[in-house]
Image 1: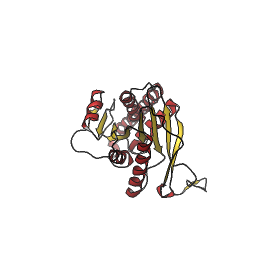
Image 2: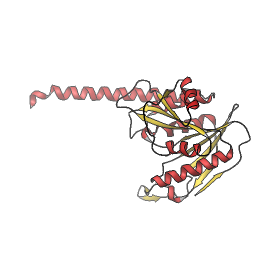
Image 3: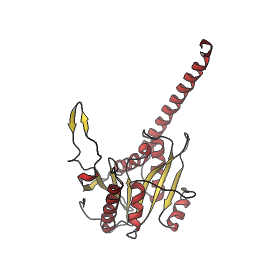
Length: 250
């Protein structure tokens, strides 16, 4: 595996934000939005064929290949107050070994580059739709968790775990003396993109980092998502009522 950064952080305050695909594509949507809104530039990549998904993709019957694509990438957003190194990818490694290998190498490269804190993002599953998704937090240090709670996040109650890269990165950064936290937005969507949950993450991250990022576009996307969802619920309700109304036929 090779982790390459295309340049050096210039001694300014620097944090890393990471989000890879997971439940509801919540983290991936949030980090992609951050890249677009900050106009972050490509800053590095991870090369290893052993990390690609164990699947071959065909388009109209013709095979495509992922082997020449930068599946895991770094972007750099240089903002007035700090530098944000952003890490993302198109999928998570398919094995636990691959996930740990990737988390270890990414944490090593980012820590050596001067990253002082890391924030990962993930989904927090709930059993039903919520009008306003809440954002929970876990952290490697109690002082950081207290800071996040003071900014409106909710400390994750009880004993919990985060699977995959969005959790493992915290462990490997902590081993290198870099504190970090994971922000988790409520979602009940499992296999489809939950834009509303992603919007909640972006707004929480904006508050945590104290950065000026325009969230109006993703908030509008979340509003349309919610309208479509309520429309689908109403159609389903009417369909069920119609089925009950036909009960005399049986």
